[in-house]
Length: 353
Image (cartoon, rainbow, N blue to C red; front, side):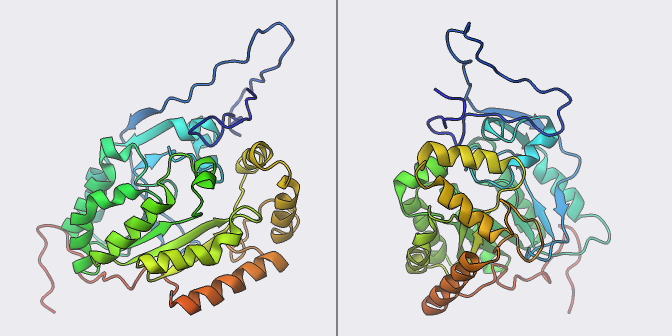
């Protein structure tokens, strides 16, 4: 088996160098070895006592200015994940390491309560799921996301959630309470309705039917929920865009967004290897359309362009989305105008106004 052939249940089998490593090791077949090195695909989780928990941004492309990620790395194994390069900061590879060598910030809830209690803290929605999925499989064991939601509920602090994990339904009790006070909105990431494509594109994420069920159940419990069609990949899943929106709207989604495939840093070669392994006959066509939408490159980080791209293909995708969303009554804006006025650290006096 080639080191670039994805392992069953994983997005990739390769571990490209992280760009900060002082030394690089290259495996070369000199004819003496009997077989290739054994590649471990067992998930390992390392506990971390974090020093800070709220990450702030000034990006004009994002509808939030702060986020929280209880985990580093993501077991879902989505080969296209834009967060993969961040694993290099922890001296690990954005490849297989990102899916198998996870870090759990075990003091997430405690640290969040401390930061929200600081004098002068100004309330604004916190996003869960900006970098890695808060409902990835290890959350079943660690329950860090649930603990964070408990703190947010206690403090009456608004939160937005982005996930492709059906495990979110475990926390219906907390989400329902937050929703009653207009303190939560959820976006379910839906990339395909094809189970076979999902298995190789997002190996350990919830099945399409499970994600649609999550939308339906959240809607039935009056938790504001929308759909995020991301990423849209030329010649892979872009033809499904209208069907994805229709299925989500039928399940109860009230809003919708889409994002064109992003391939920053080490993600690009991982995605190219994935294409050659699964879609060799159309790989060059896919990459050509990506370059046409990214000013001749595989990635353009420019604000205002990085989520939607530019050029003929990107414009067509944008028009298709706009027409379908209008026809289905899906508005834009996952914040749902959450209420920041209720914010009150436990023990503090509520406003009399």
